[in-house]
Image (cartoon, rainbow, N blue to C red):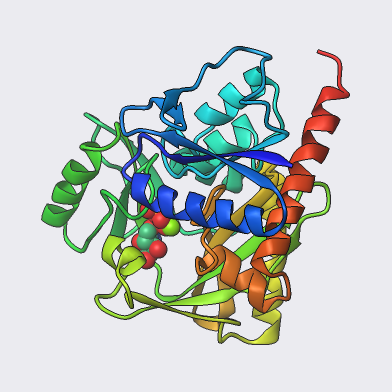
Length: 320
Ligand SMILES: Nc1ncnc2c1ncn2[C@@H]1O[C@H](COP(=O)(O)OP(=O)(O)O)[C@@H](O)[C@H]1O
Ligand SMILES: [Mg+2]
């Protein structure tokens, strides 16, 4: 297959995306496919082999059989690129417009989880210019609603800190989520599929320096150790996998997602977030969890391409 691999993009995760996209291109080539290296610059311009890419509604993309948007964060993982790919009418890997947008927005996502009775931490949505009404005690984590990679996130223990944390988060987004601080483990679980999604073994995030999974821990060599499977009792492990698939379905996700959890005392499993386009090198958490679960990187790519075609076929079967 001829596969357009989109890398770079407008978000602060531009470089992370380039690394993932390179790994995807290598993996596709190793599987006998023809990857096309489509670059998106920091200011949002698309180029292929140094030339601007012409985009025409219903015109596909460079004659590709499928597109793999390996883009993280705003303008990549939030439904915007997915909308463009829908208009181009080309099969693409991963979640569609609505699933991408809801998963990128922590306020919308948490409200949706609450509507479905999915266990999660107590939270409050605060809008810029409005006073925070928490309804739970500090300490809390304060997060911009639509970012990733821990950017703009901080912990607040007192009310003065809370004001500072809100100020920081509001620099990134007019909507902020304040959440009760979890005490316990951080566990992540990969999901692959479409109509019958499957979960990997859960992995445990062990931060090596500092006490939470901040930007440095995520991207600095040796910042985090992933323990697979997570060191939790069997029933908790199964509960995580079951919830990962349930959340994937609620959001109406497709292809891949990594669902992140907190596990508190007594084995209480709480959903934190769903990432529709998690880091995707062979050593990223997403791929490592499946590798240990018996699905190597090359096979992940094959399955994701098949799922992209299946979804495109199925969606086109409906009349609008
Ligand atoms: N309520 C919380 N309690 C404890 N730690 C938290 C909480 N919320 C976030 N964190 C820490 O901050 C990190 C980033 O938060 P997260 O909600 O996953 O945002 P991002 O989308 O940036 O990954 C988490 O991996 C965790 O280490
Ligand atoms: Mg996270």
